Image (cartoon, rainbow, N blue to C red; front, side, top):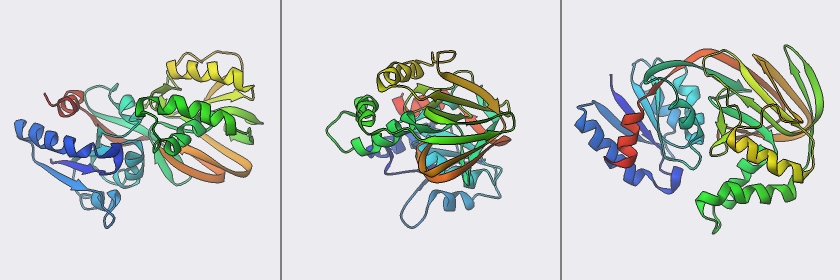
Length: 290
């Protein structure tokens, strides 16, 4: 078994330049057989994964949530295990994975239309906050304050959209402040939208908040950040294996760091679809260069 590191040079503003030598050092210390591959304009992440489709390796993604989301469609078709060296801006998937037991864990995936994800697909004020971070990333705002700045930026432009939700247990039609389809628990750079979610229960946790004033949305988002929003007035939750969402005009979902725009979405949970490898000590040694 080899350790394959697929590196996104763009994620995290060039963090890979410091991380790759640390990967090499840690692998040498552990006498691991490893390869380091780079995503380029000529070869994308799934093309790299396809080279190992008949093998059983640990494929580490060195990048952010978006890099990971893009590679899932390739890894899910193989027997390779997935690892993460977080080097993006949000790194929410790593927050979720590192809470699993050490070693190999067979977990659920979710799929929205043709895109796989581990954590959360969301739309509404929370999704637009996450999407607008990209707009603000190239400004003078410090990276540590991007999400807070995006909250205020988004409030100026946000418009409620009427949606129809169809599930195997209920149908709902309304305007929402927040709609999040959760397999894992985190999004938006640490917002704990689904504190009780489990990656192995074969269910999606659906959270939605009714239309409310912007003044009421601010404390709601602060509660979501801490994971204390469950049971609050106008916040609802249910669990399902399947959900369909219809809107009159196209809307954009934020899907684990990637954007998906459409007016019809079909989301399913895929039980025990992928094996992830959690070695938090290995990752910490690389990131902290012990």
